[in-house]
Image 1 (cartoon, helix red, strand yellow):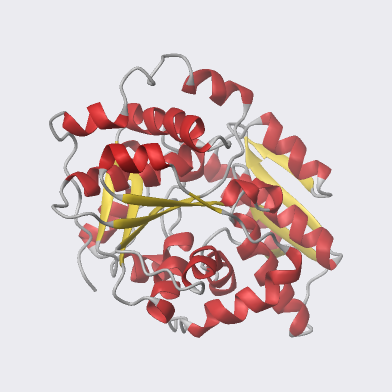
Image 2 (spheres, rainbow, N blue to C red):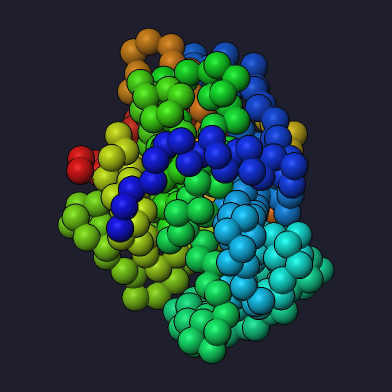
Length: 344
């Protein structure tokens, strides 16, 4: 398995540009005044289908089309955003798509996937969804994996690339970690345009397979989908492909559920745009990191998407977190320690 060249990110950006949105970079002057750092937010909720996943799916299928190797049928497994992205990308190139979704996936995301033209099969668990997708591949379908695919990784890295190609060179970049594809592409984008920038991953404490895998130096798989409100991080494991990049990151942070909810509420409030819990993971890690910095830093926070199901909205707003401002939170004692990702 060869590593991707950082130049693959630039190639992907050029390839997918006509079919995706260039998403905005947002700031909150109030947040920055409270915390004493310059936080920038790449808002992928403004992307096609409302999430960064579109970038990887579109790049993969356009690459296959360029190579005259486009299959007749695509299959994927997903709890939501990748499902919609695959449906959109398949419709774009004119092939059929079947997406296998676990029953825990939100009805809203399931219906959106169907609206983009894909067939949907619902299974009992995420593990069963992955197994059923593998069965369909044996019957001749092409598996478009959500992260264990070089073309997907390259496409997902274009979110960070869009920021860096405009000349920004932040001190640190933070992104959520599910299967590790987005972080892998982000690492490559910074190697191409801003190699001095530190890259950090963030995952829920309840879904810390990436941390465990980095510590062990091999892929550690969870036995069942973790119970975290960050549904985009409910993957059972990273892959050997993405683990190689994750082990090159500066660190991986673990975040508890109250902090995920806290930052979901505050980012929705401060940025005035939908921010899903998986996006808030990145800010929760960035906040913990920024508290330990003794000089003002510029921090790029990659927000994965803005698709929030009604049932998730109810969980997010069950308690009011806005009574405690980030300024007051920063003055509180430090909470969860970080988990260091060993270097490759």
